[in-house]
Structure formats: C-alpha cells, structure tokens
Image (tube, rainbow, N blue to C red; front, side, top):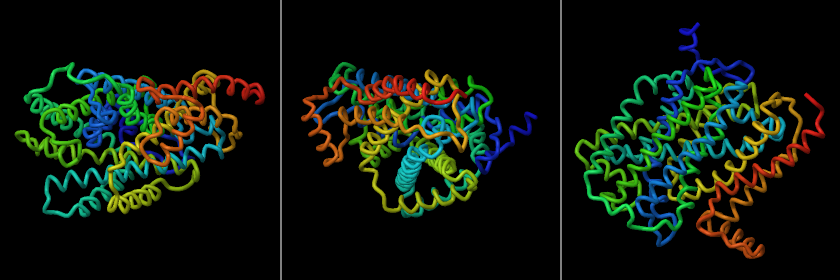
Length: 443
C-alpha cells in the first residue's frame, strides 16, 4: 500500500479522490523550496527601504523579516489544515464559506494572480539564466522555462517527491555557501539606521508568504496527517524564507550596487564559485512557476470540475510564457500589495468561520448554498487594508487618500495593513457568521 502511494499522482478531475501520497518529508521539501525565491532576494530591498528616504537598521530589517515570515507562514499553515481534513483543494473549500457559485469570485481572482505569479517567475528565471549565459537570447530561456514548467505541472506529486529527494540538499548547500561568502564583507552597525516604517516592511514580507494561502490546500490535501501539513509547511517555509531574505539583505548592504535584479544576481556571481551556487538557485526557481501553474489549473476546476487538469495546465503555462516574453517586473511591490489586500482579509474570514463559527463542518459540494452575507467581512477587511496601505499605483493611491481625508483618518507607519485588515475581517465574521448559522437549517 505504501509503495503504491509513493507512486500515486494527483487526480485529473475534481470527481476523483485525492491520494494521500505526501509524507512529512515531502511537505518539508516542497515548502522549504518554495521559501527560496530569486524574487525574495530582491524583495529585501522593500524591507531595507520601506519608505522614501528611510533606511531600516539591520536589527529592524532582520526583525521585520522574522516577524513577517512567522505571521505569514502561520497563515499558510492554518489555511492548509482544511485541505488535509477534507481532501478538497483551496478554491473548492471556499464553497463552504461563500457557497458553490459565489466561490467563483475568489476563484477567478486566484487564477488571475497565479497566472501573474507564473509570468513573474518565468521573467525572473529567464533574466537570471541570461545573466549566467548571455550568449543565448532571453526569450529562449522564457520558452524553455515555460515548457519545463508546464511539463512538471502535469505530474505534480512526482515532482514534489523529486524536490525532496534531490533538489532540497543542493538548495541548502547553495544558500549556506552564498551566505557565508557574503558575510565576509564588512557590515554597518546593527543599530545604524531607523525603525521608522518597520510595519510597512513587515507587510511586504507577509505579502510574499500570504500569496501561498490561496493554494496551500492544493498540496496538503495529499498529506497523510494534519501534523505533516502544519510542521511541513511552517518549518519548511519559514526557515528558508528567512534565510533567503537575510541573504538578500546582506547583499544589499555589502556588494550589490542597487536592489535591481541585475545587480543582485551579479553580487551573487561575484563571490568565489558564486556562479555555480547561483545557477542552482536559478534552475530551482522552476518549482515556483510549476506550483503556480498547477494551482491555477486546480483552481479553474472549481469552475469546471470535469475539465482535465493536464489540459488546463498546458493552457495556463502557454499563456504565462507568452506574457513573460513582454512583461516587466518593475511593479513587483505593487503586485504584492494588491495580493495582500485581497487575500489577507479573505483568510481572516476563512479561518474565523471554519475553525470557530462552523467548527470545521463545511458543505463543499457543488450544491453548497450561496452565502452573500459572508462577502461583507471580506470587503470590510479589504477596505481597512486600502485605508492603511493603498499601494503605489498613483490613481488608486490618490483615491484612497481622498477617502482617508473624508474620514479624517491619518495612517501612521506603526500600523500594519496586513494585521489590521485580518483583524477587521475576522472580528466582523463573528456576528455575520453567527447570524448566518441561525438562519440556515441545521446540517
């Protein structure tokens, strides 16, 4: 039986039961690899410089990395538990919160953001590979990365087991080596800088972690136990993301001329044998694009349960490849803020209703009744996020600035948009959820 599970693959449609084929070591390998990202290295820029003309001290930046990672990863682990308990993928679980048809709204948003993430990853992979071997045009690397990404998404559980067996060790060695080499350079004093903007820096780190909340159950539905899910996701992801951001931070403070991808990657390759270590990380980045592509396919199945996930993966991988040929990552932080503002409060509603109000009893069938009232706490949380941190798209930020003025509300730098929006959504879910349960017939 165990040997059969070790070779099992994800079902092709939602009508087939998911095999419980992933052990603790598989979850550790998956989430440990997802915590390492080339975008995470450059994301350290938004931690070190959270506001214009503001530079955090090393102590403040490291604290922001740890706090943001722990909070964000805790959300991922909590969101992953229902997948293991029910066997349902992430977007199907939302049928229990909003109803079958109404769950299509967050599903569409999730597919759009996953397509965006796949595109981002293909851009960053091709940029890194072109910097490693510039004799080949970048578009060739995009096409190769897109083809490999799509191929891996056809056999997700097999690839996860491969990550655990072969890739994880190479990634750990590369991270440790780059970290040691970079730390040989002199650093400024730990207290040199400011704590002003600390919570804005935390928000940018949380946003990266929380981006996995809407997909976590797509993989933990294959876990054998809830313990494997929680330990694997929290320990695996948090350790490697902290290491990834920390290395990016050290590079910015020592040898990187700026926070651009080009300069960050050049800093890694400048250390002795750094090209080899960086090549390992660049090639491994495909696991990020694979996860996004597969989850986009599984999310689409919430709309059309009988569609074959393999065909969906081919379509999504092809679209992302086309977009990556002409896409820029200059608006990366804007993308993260938008993701956070949508999915942080959604998780607040999700967690409060599932764990507290409904006590882990949800109807996730195709006939689950519509619950329009549950949109209210989600919207309130989204508004709270925008009032505190509307991002950097000029017209959008101006609009929310006018709303702040109308409300006579002045956000301060110590206010975390992620924490406040989560709290608002979760608290608002209590009366709304209890009222909804009173009006619904008993299960």
